[in-house]
Image 1: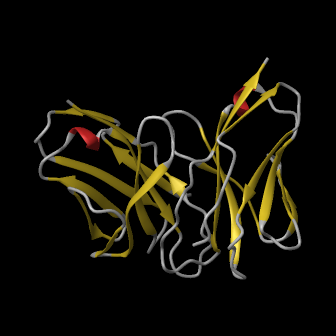
Image 2 (image 1 turned 90 degrees about the horizontal axis):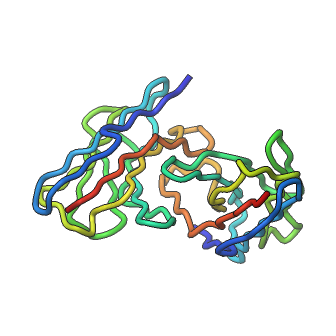
Amino acid sequence: SQTIHQWPATLVQPVGSPLSLECTVEGTSNPNLYWYRQAAGRGLQLLFYSVGIGQISSEVPQNLSASRPQDRQFILSSKKLLLSDSGFYLCAWVRGLGGPDTQYFGPGTRLTVL
Amino acid sequence: LAKTTQPISMDSYEGQEVNITCSHNNIATNDYITWYQQFPSQGPRFIIQGYKTKVTNEVASLFIPADRKSSTLSLPRVSLSDTAVYYCLVGPLYNQGGKLIFGQGTELSVKP
């Protein structure tokens, strides 16, 4: 069966510090991978998605970046965090070519920037 | 991708049937309709998916009229544990372009 992992689960960082969130998927190959952010309340904002290694599409201009160094690994980074980067970060995967588009979400990372 | 519109919030009582409607006037011929449920501090989880008419599983039913410009998620006999945010998404089933966008969702509050 497929599983998706995210870490860390919670993170408190000062403004201006770097960020690295990791997401890994097990039990599938060639998944599409997604990073979402959810601010207080609800509404998921799509940040990045990737259809393959090294292929990153950015949805909103921001001080965040994403990378996909391996087929089942997706990393969200920042060189200098802003207060507005606080939120709940969710990674999701979808079967790649030939698969239905049901998204499976990870447990999320709660980021607080102080 | 077709834009969706849902009510911001709904209230219900235990044991009642709840119907949440989603409008998607610009749905394309190859678009499917998918509903997700999200509890606080958790990622959304898949509930049900359909293309037309009616789909039913162990959790919910999905009603889609012939023009497919709207859909209704029906939760039979809700309990307190059904309190969550429900999202409606519209997009191709095999979206090799990769992008799937969530709307604001409907916050369902079930009271005893």
